Image 1 (cartoon, rainbow, N blue to C red):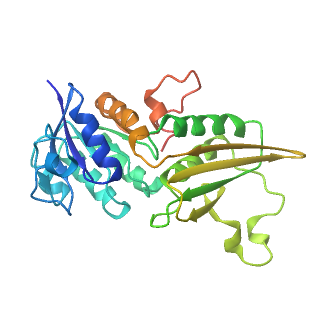
Image 2: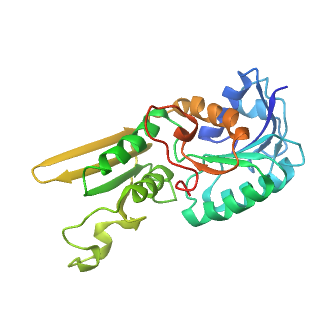
Amino acid sequence: MAVRVCLAGATGWAGSELARGIARSSDLAVVAAVSRTHAGRVLGDVVGEPRLDCRVYASAIEALTHTCDVFVEYTRPESAKSNVLDALQHGAHVVVGTSGLTADDFAVIDTVALKHQRGVLAAGNFALTAVLLLKFAELAARFIPQWEIIDYAHDDKTDAPSGTARELAERLSKVRHPDRTVPIDQTIGARESRGATVSGSQIHSLRLPGYVISAEIVFGMPDQRLSIRHDAGSSAVPYVDGALLAIRKVPTLIGVHRGLESVLDLGLPQSSRSDAL
């Protein structure tokens, strides 16, 4: 039987591409969708895929009246946490693609997921190149003690830092906190010019036309520098395969797991579930 999916944010930039990807998959089926803009319509009519014959609802609570195996959260930061908690309480496993959730948010979600014995797989970015950025940066941080993160996004992205940059900082904090020649609180001038401190790392968020989503980490040592950068193109296609994999894998998990590589064999050391929180 196909895995039944409830897709929140189904008509958005990433959600609509994922919906079409699910329609092409023989082992997955969208049974309900969430979009306030297109509530009451048939999803396939909105995204141009006739195989998607489910209804679109204005809220996750309404959509969750349809029994689903996996709830996919692709909405907005202000609604993501409550949507995830509602889905867990309805007995669904959850895939989170929405950025803006904090470590404290995931700690609350983990408690509820464990109570209901359900899995939550959250990734700031489902693109393979972003997954490799995270893993390569963790490896570099073992050897290079100083770094800062630059977070690039389109001018109308409201949350900062991006989910990818936030996840990167949280992961690096499990390796070590960066050394600083001059502590941030000893900055002379505008403290804000040094960026936001997230899990011990400095993140500088740019929001400008011309960017989609990019994340860069710059490591520095005396007389040498290493930069690792992920750049997303203008389409959401790179995120589909990773999200489909997450949907297929999350029913095998219990509790919160951070990052797509937690269900991938990259030949690199994996973070434990507790370390990922």
